[in-house]
Image 1 (spheres, one colour):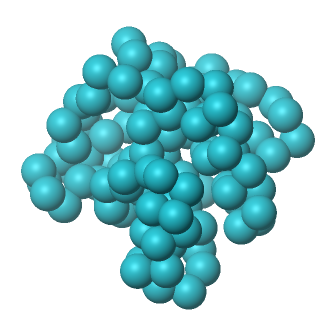
Image 2 (cartoon, rainbow, N blue to C red):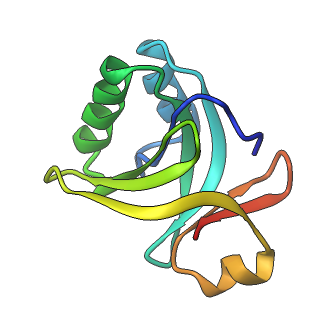
Amino acid sequence: MRTPTNPIVILSFNSRTSDYEVGVLRARGFRAKAVYGTYKGVQERSYVVEALDNKALDTILHLAWLYRQECVLYCDDLRKATLIYSDGRKVPVGHLEPISIEEARKRDSSTYDPETGLHYGTN
């Protein structure tokens, strides 16, 4: 995954198909990078979406809650990572950074970018 300079959100929908999920994001003006996430040990289709301002972040969070997601991973421009939960809690979890495949396998949460072959996790 290319390290963007803009704040990002990593989220999942766990709905119909990836085409449907990308369409939901595009209909709201977002470009999404498809990645594979693992959350609480369960693999899921995930997307990296830029959250350029508070309005964009609010829209992304609304979509996540609409699709019954427990939380999303928000990363600021310095890659400081925070889990934002549907009940409003915000839990800092370190910084998003590349990790080895071995380290990714040990964790119950990580992200894999198939385009670059890199795994990411928080420290």
